[in-house]
Amino acid sequence: MKVFAVLLLTLICFIYHLDAFIPKQQHSSSFLQARKNHHYNSALSAGNHNHDRLSHEKVIWKLRPAETTGLVKRVTLRLTANAIRLDCFLKKQDLPFVLCPRGGQAVLEAYLEGEGKVARFGFSTIRGPPAPLIDETAEDLFGIKLEGRSVGSAAIIYMFVEPSQRKLGLGEMALEIISYIHATQGCDFTLLVADDDGSGKLVSWYEKYGFKKAPKLQNLLGSPNG
Image (cartoon, rainbow, N blue to C red; front, top):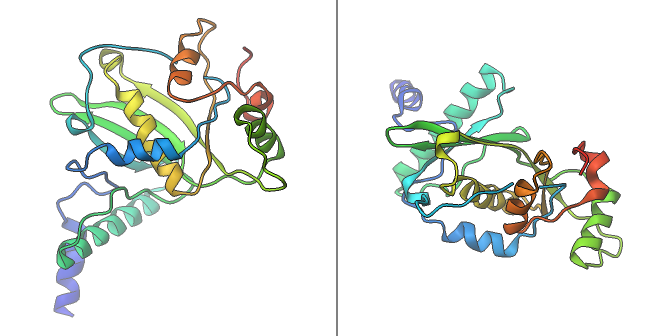
């Protein structure tokens, strides 16, 4: 009983940040490889550039449950993440590269030392149900023949970077991470809706990173005209 009480206290008080994690010591090579193996598909699509760009090593990435997640579920996820960390520590195993909250959606947050949270990105974490219109779009855009099979897709719901931290590569790195998560969840395509106010810059930025316009999906995904 005493051992159980100590373990429980350890789980509750464990010093790691808990909802989920991407270990800082890992590099971006796995993300880049996942991008090579993971096709992108967009339902419209953003843009920026600068020399003083950040790298993954300079950013603390944290995965959180979606904003709509209830308190009980958040606490459960924290304890579960702690239990996995503790298990890895006791067995002297490497931490999982990514521990993604269950529930269908998650929020990826970016933190910079001395700045706090500077960006957040909402996305779905599970493969969506089959949709004939998405299958048809995949065949049209990428020249593939599904022959009765159906592709799996997930979505980026929103992307926000604080104005003072834009043009530093945070959006590009977030796309790499989300793409990696979607690929590990068995998703073939990542969908998103982008309203670029008619300037074309937002669309061009997403196209630069592999996205393609998918006008057939505008009604399905509720994307704006254009």
